[in-house]
Image (cartoon, rainbow, N blue to C red; front, side, top):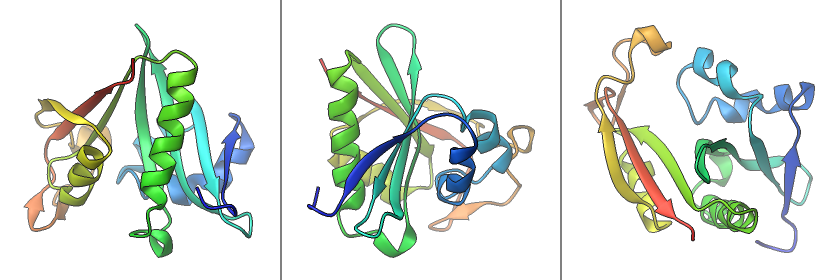
Length: 160
């Protein structure tokens, strides 16, 4: 964290509506985002001007687990270590409140995100085939890196 950055926790409510644009960077389905964005802890990293530069939505799960449901960094701040600092801060917060295991899912074609999570200490856990379907609000034909978006790749990290 640079001296000019501040980690903020945004409570559920209308304040989160202002962050929908950033949240939609993390998920191609607005339907899905709207189904979960008012749940859990929304951590926002703010830059020197107070504007959000990145965010993570962490939702508690049974058994001392949490899911990083949405992780996003503003496009103009990507590639500058913001995501690395943000995820480290959030994992420290979660560990401090007793979370023992964190999971995160990303698309099978999201090569950059898969590398990012592994560099942050996550390991492959499981694949959920056919996750990104129209039934879940994802349009047909989404591709990244020339690879069709089909399956959710789940990763996890033990904190305890």
